[in-house]
Image (cartoon, rainbow, N blue to C red; front, side, top):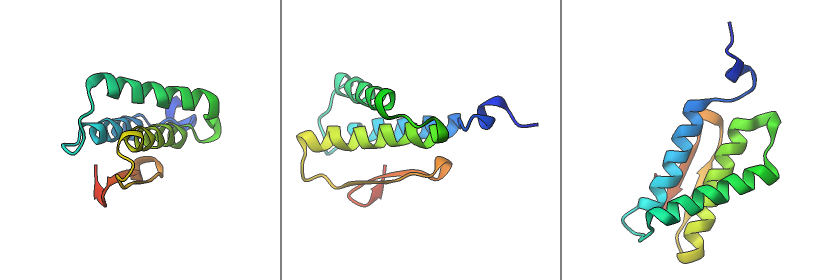
Length: 101
């Protein structure tokens, strides 16, 4: 029997892993972000999701909100930081200078 969350396309582990990666990017030793910055990045992701969330693919939509917000937040202060990502539910990755975060 399929769980209601999976039926709705909500994969909690994938979302939690993505949020952790986004927060870990801001915690990287190359950056000097604070806890307040991490909270702000989370707020950016939430605001993006409220305005652009796709309920047809909610998990990837949430992951995109976090990865794109983390990249934008870092690039605002560190414009030369190379941040990329790949999004596909549990197979989603965030990279800084080619290394997975």
